[in-house]
Amino acid sequence: MNNITGFLIRIIISAVILFALISKTDCIDIKTLGGTILTVSIISFFNALIRPGFSLFKIPLKNSLYLIFSILAVNIIISFILINILPGITVIFNSSLLGVLIFFVLLNATLNKFIEDR
Image (cartoon, rainbow, N blue to C red; front, top):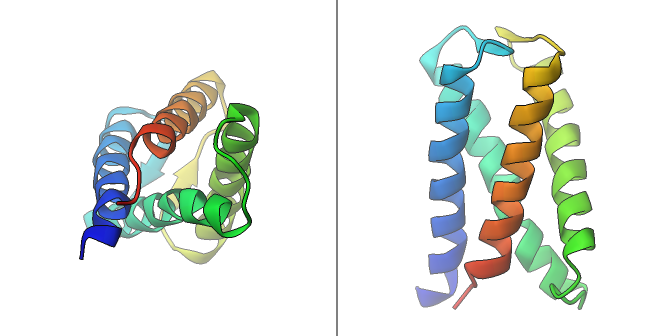
């Protein structure tokens, strides 16, 4: 049970902050609450999988550049997949979207760096 604690904490913190970001910005519009919760939970789950993926492939987390670019790539890929699959998601590409993306990537890099799987 203790092996999954850090993983779940990273998912919950990431999901709550992403939910707040989506609800407060005008660049991402998701029509329903269920769609928002599903989107947030999927993105947070894949962001939390990055740390176990690094340890699976024996990549040290000391190099933060690998971590930041892998989180950025995961967020962009998963976001585009969800935009195409889930109905009711509208994204306006502007500077506030870039700010949300940078903030969320740095937040997840910090979470993955400091919250360990026990």
